Structure formats: C-alpha cells, structure tokens
Length: 381
Image (tube, rainbow, N blue to C red; front, side, top):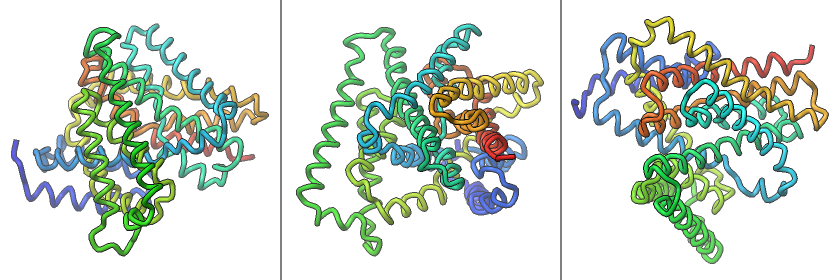
C-alpha cells in the first residue's frame, strides 16, 4: 500500500470542498454524497486507492466524529429531568431493543445485529427538531432523549458484548471494562475538581483569540489519551473517543467558540475524509447482485419498523398518530454510529463483509429518507 499519493490527496480535497455545496443544492445529506464520491473515484474509476496516509486521516476523522457525538450526551439534562422523565424514552429504546432481538433471533442472525438496528443518529435528529422549532416541546424532548439514550446505550452494550465475545465468557475476564469505566470516572472527577478550583487557568481554553489554540490542543489530547486508554484496556477505541467528548462536555458545559472551532476543524475536512474512505473501501462487486438490493430493502423495513412500532408509546402523552409515526421515522435515521457498529461486528467476526456493505448502504438510505418520512407525516394537512 502506497503511503502518500499526491493525486489522490488533490482529488479527495476537491471533493471535500465541492460536495457540501452540491448536497445543499440537491437536498441530500453531504455524508451520503461523500460515500458515493469515494465509491466513484475509487472502485468505479480507479483514480484513488486508500493509502496509509488517507486511512490515517480517515481514522482521525472517525475519532473526531465520535468525540463530537459525545458532546451531545449532556447528563445535566438527565439530572434536571429526573428519573421519571426518563422512563418514556427509556421504554421506547427498550421496545426497540426487544423488538430487534426478537426479529434478529427469529431470522437466525447474530444478536449483535439487533444492536446495530437499535442505533439512531442524534446528529440528524437534533438539527431537524431545531429547524421545526419542536426541540423544546414535550414531543421534541421525547424524541431527543430517546435518540440520546439510543446512541449512548447501544455503544455501551456493544462494548460489553465485544468484551464477552473476546473472552468467550462473562466473568472476571471482563473486569477490564469495569476498570476502564472506573478510570474514566476518576478522570471526570479530577477534571471537574481542577476546573472548579482553578477557573482562571481554564479560561484560556475558550479564548477564541488564543494564538496557540490551547482549547483545540486540550480537546485532541483528551480524545487521543482516552482512545489510547481504551486500547490498553482492550476496549473499543471508538468508545474512548465518544466518552472523551462526553467527559469534556460534562466538565465544560458552556464551550462557546471552542465547540464551533472543533466542529469547523473536524466537519470541514477530516470527517469528510472518513466517509470518502468508506466509499474507497466499498465492495463494488456486491452492487451488481440483485439479491443485495432485496436484502438491503428488507433491512430498511426492519430498521424503520423497530423504531416506528415502539414510538407508539408516545400515545400516552396525547401525541397524535401522525406525529407518532413521524417521530418513529426520524428516530430511524442512522449514519455514523451504525457504520461504527458494523465495523465492530466485522472485527469480532459477528458480521461478514457482505452484511457490513448492506449496513453502509442502509445508513445512506435512512439518512436520506428518514427525515423526508418525518416531514411527510408531521406536515399538517
């Protein structure tokens, strides 16, 4: 594998710049176009191959994606709402998990696929609820909290599941996961105490005029350190990146311009490279098989069903039938996390490459059509 190909970098860089403009014009999520672009310039035209350099940048982009996803998990929301307020979204998520387990077990797939189907994309859910000015309503909060819980718990359960699969048992051998979370809690406690006692020293992290960008440096240091810790404890690295974002958000709930800078730095270049690289490594031959599309359609029906059916629990809050179905469709939007879960499944030998390709295709479909389904049912006629 060639380490550095200047032509490949030029083609990928131009794509990362142009694709968001095109996505905005044709009203398709940029992430979908980025995967399609990688597929075209790679397997289809053979202009670019995934080198060590591109793979390295894509991996960093993936970690940044999970780190910023961790920013969305604000536990203060759960503390403010109280346990009673969390029961409905937890019940909806539990319904999704149980229904997924039943269907997957009935069809003879590995149970890990149930976790894959239970994921949701908070990154898609939140912007749409904000655009429709429903994020602060009872309806919007139900969907928002359900998506948050789905993101956090599916990744957590997947980590425990992976540990059990690796050790082939559940017992003392899985103490690494427990110890890892103890270390994370200690880091959280130390950072919170330090920030409390020395607030002046931490102000520089959020100074947008800081010439040395200490805020971005500290964010990346925390993320990479926790990714390194996860490797040491034999825990999924993406969980380390995700928890690093959560820890940072808990210690510094008001991140101001730092979050904007991080998102600009990440979504502006490195995260698009991750999705383009997904397309570069896609198995194009599978797209010539008609059975592939039938199986993807079948997975799409399952992916929507396991979200829409449990969403009917919203009826207890006097939410209309149309809004319930719309909420179920919005919760069926998936992207980054479902791709991450698919990669974990392949790494553990629980899913094969064919199923991973189907899941990536499914992610693109749900990211595109779930918001359309939400708006179709939520528009009052």
